[in-house]
Image 1 (cartoon, helix red, strand yellow):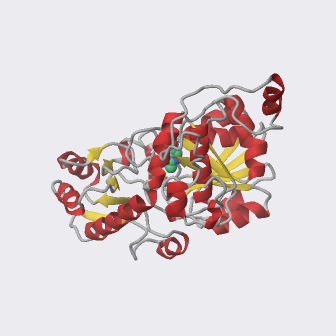
Image 2 (tube, protein in one colour; image 1 turned 30 degrees about the horizontal axis):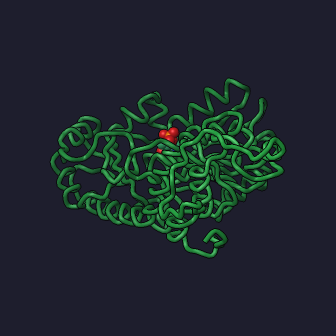
Image 3 (tube, rainbow, N blue to C red; image 1 turned 45 degrees about the vertical axis):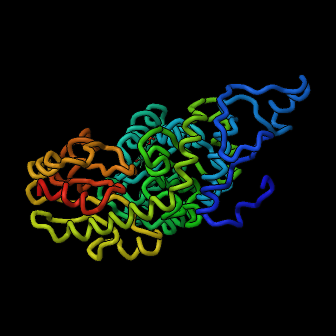
Length: 393
Ligand SMILES: *Cc1c(COP(=O)(O)O)cnc(C)c1O
């Protein structure tokens, strides 16, 4: 089993079996290696491991068998050469920036990314002389027009949050490469089960493992997947020095999350699609945003690029914020929380929570109306979910 070439296996099999190097104890389930350091047979061996001339564990800030297993498994599933795990999704994004950028560099980022990603580029990388321009996710000509001679990478999330817009990864990869830039995709919403950005031409995938990879809302974690070359030159040295490491316990939770990821994603997608179709027929709803619907502007692209349409649905109530809050407050079962990707269905009012720090003008430009409600569809019975939404409609 140690010598299995997991590349020959399907994602579902990799997700369950890859990454575990069984120890001399013959355990069936992967252990949590709760150790900060490792012992060496001799001073000579210690020196060889520290210089990297001899492979092996050194110190758990950057080498831990449980974390390694998670990294190996996720790399295979994303069809990447290497994966590095981080303490959170934001730590992974931070690592990409720290590893690749220097003062004077420029980044192009889509407007619809996670709020803290905007703050990371604008406030923190900005503080050290990296300039970021934000563009409309689905406007390829805007991406190309924003590229400057000092642009290092393009960064996007697809589908976007909370409007579920879809970017053409292949086309943006071509644009990036034509201008000598890298394309980075935050694949948190789709996971490798629904979409493999590296196969579509992206250079780096980042993850918040906190969402669907955990799947049950327990741990915070993140990951970067890329070629050996990018990881070795730019990301690993930063992880080793910067130290935003994933703990072995969290890696162990995420490993079991990966084992059920495929079957969970399919169930999330089926329920979300059903909910979206049902919402379209309810009175008081002005628009439903879901790529599975014919009414979605990038329905064809979603069909081409993703294997399913995803577990997140958002919709606009004609009655604005008042009706949105009324609907949220009338629910009995759904969790009122900004988290997503959980087996529990969550309901959010983006305009006053996740996107509340944006000015009303910026929010309007981003298309986030006051009547918008986002639902991360969980795995409860779909009829119970509908019933809970119906209470406040
Ligand atoms: C949650 C989230 C992040 C940040 O991840 P954390 O694990 O919370 O740090 C990044 N990108 C997307 C799309 C997210 O949803």
